[in-house]
Image (cartoon, rainbow, N blue to C red; front, side):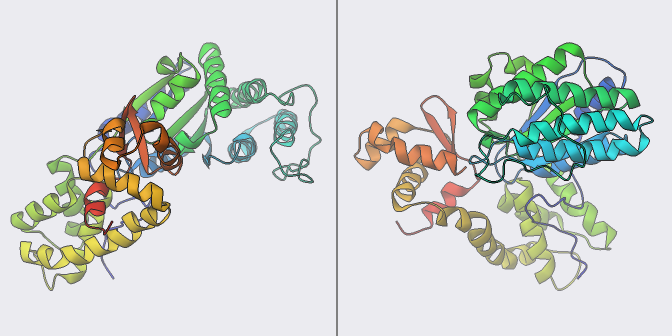
Length: 390
């Protein structure tokens, strides 16, 4: 019952270890925007299970502590960002509205927001008049052209103007940003570019897989200079130990040095795995300190939980052809592999494997590390596949 470890999707661990640099970077962004200085939006990238969503949620809390307006969405490849962004900005403005001395300014913006939301051309028939609970008439001639790049730019500029009135900022957080549709990525970059030029206090903070920078760059060449990029990876030994030791100490529990050695070897520094192995080791250890023997006994149960929840659920989503493709990648190794080598192993032409590769990329199971190279988005996925029957 007192187990402090939290191996959940996006669930904040009791000790957010090893992310001080990223937290300091975001603190600088918030401070610069508060002082009216020009600042870039921010993008966090990394593999599954390294804590991107946790970091995004922590950034959101930091912005809220400064009384910023905040909103968050999770991108989906089958959905335009128009409605989710409208809902997120509605939430952000609702946070600011009680402190604004001019209610008509809020109503004016909400009219623009409603017009923006109602111009969703991808909406199902009969739902075009959807609005996020806004009781003001839709404005005309602002953010309602139907061209997302124009509309999003105008909406962001107007939202930033409301925040300027209060001397604060607005932060829009986008999780799974690599799944934003291609045309929407272009619109998002254009809107951020406009904000960066006029110094509006609205920033976009995204999180996504390692290939997200290339997705942004393919959309707008200037995106490389538009965002502040932070790549997060596995924890070093000191941070991984801290993630285990600090929460345990609060409950009067310790680990032997040998137990910490065994846990680091098993988890390989990946934050999700650190929490998963730590949780099971705690549950099965009869007393403190937790020993290497406790870790040895706990490892099979932790691995079984990961095999079902972390690896298995993703493997089950793949078709037989996609599974063959993934098994071929895994048999070559754990580092990014050459697509031509995968085709050769399967005895197929590279072009004939493009549908399987593209589908796996869309499902978020693999990513293109660079041209001609592919890798798994999930750490240790190759090891898992090698243990599965082909």
